[in-house]
Length: 362
Image 1 (cartoon, rainbow, N blue to C red):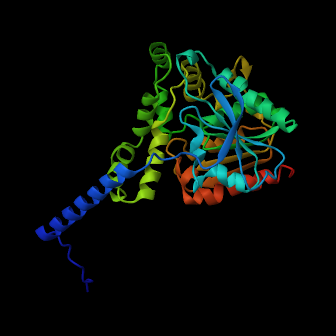
Image 2 (image 1 turned 60 degrees about the vertical axis):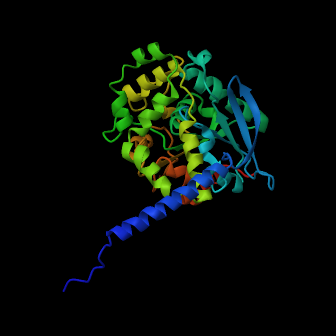
Image 3 (image 1 turned 30 degrees about the horizontal axis):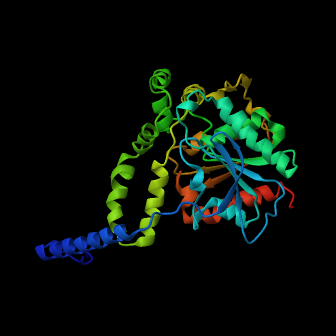
């Protein structure tokens, strides 16, 4: 016998009620938007400790406690977005989670490029800027090597730096980092293999942020260009949810232009030549051999990552020279690994526990 089903009321009266409810909700949302203060980005106090041109090194501070770990942790983020994603707000901050567990956390801020940066190369970013920050920390903390955490493209930079300067990196953490750029499920990598990057850079100089953002958004056009804005109507009268939405939108569209020569090199050596897998990467004339990455490595990837699928990250295990290699698989996506509730609970703890076993306390 079929179970009785409640009929769906789609009569004129029901439609009228729903329309009136939506109208009232939109009106409350409009009033909320008029009174909403500009959203604040960042949860943790920080101070600038080193600078080279537009590139700055910041140290995060906790007012209520000093770090318990003697070896500083340097976070290297990607060039294509601003690094405050790891410290977006109080309840969505990987940095805050690391600080609360006693880590001494620093981050590189690449700044905003302009036409004067057109000819910066990967050697500038990896050896001059990242290397300069590492050397500053080594001197300031009187240590031979630092803990390095690279995220996304920053993870590629960190791998290259660690391979070229293995004695300066004590422990290496890579997070949503592409290694094999030729996997079948990597749509972005598939697009770039047919790109005439020489024509693009020679024509544009620096690569505009809007061009890059459009590429990322069109990887999931329905979800990122339609669905999330339709869903916005559900939270227009919820101040906290609306502020969270606006913080995320601020980060998505707060993107620097990319230095032309560095972009050309990155696309050619990594996306098109798959240089990390084939062992063909050269930075400033020096060969990058991942077998020289002999320090402990923790590789964290996201299972539903559409930008860096797990198949692009996991091959790192067979390429590095270290025998002390661990992986953490996160059930989420490329953004969720920073801001989801599960991420706040699991990711800082996993990083801290792994580093603590390999670093002496202060």
